[in-house]
Structure formats: structure tokens, C-alpha cells
Amino acid sequence: MVDTVTQAANSAKGPVEAMFTADEASRRLGIELLQHGPGTAVLRMTVTPAMVNGHKIAHGGYLFLFADTAFACACNSHGPTTVAAGADIDFVAPVYEGDVLVATAQERTRFGRSGIYDVTVMRDEEVVAEFRGRSRILRGSTSKESR
Image (cartoon, rainbow, N blue to C red):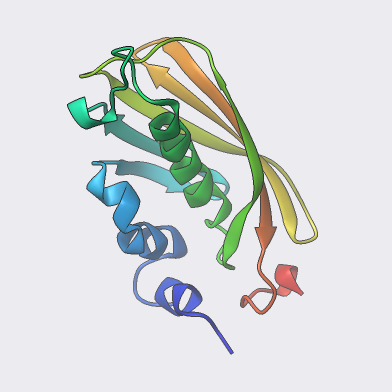
């Protein structure tokens, strides 16, 4: 049986657009999908007042969510439903209300049903966070690689 995300991916939209359209959490935060390709994605987000913690800097959870969304777009670009098996983030510089961030995800390797992806989050020309995600294709997804 094919899951609903895979069914959406098989619609007129490609797998990334279908997944992103269904991602209510990311869209409500104002995350925009700028571009994507096989194993890659570029997204943009503006830090809002609701994303700032008691230290007047962006809460790390929002930066993680933003990078994780870029990771999801990149690892789902191949078609089968793919989820995070794990991820880590390093916060390199503080982020403030009003900052416009760009996350660029890049596939490093895929092997069997697994993959490794790196995401760099930048403010203008400054790196503010580095994220590494480990993906896993769900069993039953429609792809020769997922079997």
C-alpha cells in the first residue's frame, strides 16, 4: 500500500513540491522553497518576533526546524518517502529578529535506503549554522532504490 505522501508526490507536482505543500509547520513559519534539484534544496526564512528567545536571539529550535526542512526537501527529491534517521546542528553565530536566512542543502552520499546531507544556514555572506542530517527511505515507498 502506498502512503499519502507518496501519492501526492506522484501527482502533477514533483515529490519536493508535494511534500512542501503538505508541510503546514514550515509554511506557517514563512519558509519559502526557492529552488531544488536532485539531492539539493535552497530555502529562505525571515526571523520573526515569535522566534526570538529571552536572550533576544533566535531560538535554536527554529533554526533546527529551518535546516531540517531544507534537508527534507533535498532527501525527498529522489521520489520515495524519506525521513530523518538523525540530525545534528552546530550554531555558529547568533541570529536576530528580522534576519533573512538562507538554507542550502546538499546530498553528500546515498547508500541503500540511507543518505547523508549537509545544510548550511547563512545570513547574507555569514554562516550562522551547520546541520548534518541522516536520512532513511521508508519501506514500501515506490522506488527501486527503497527495496
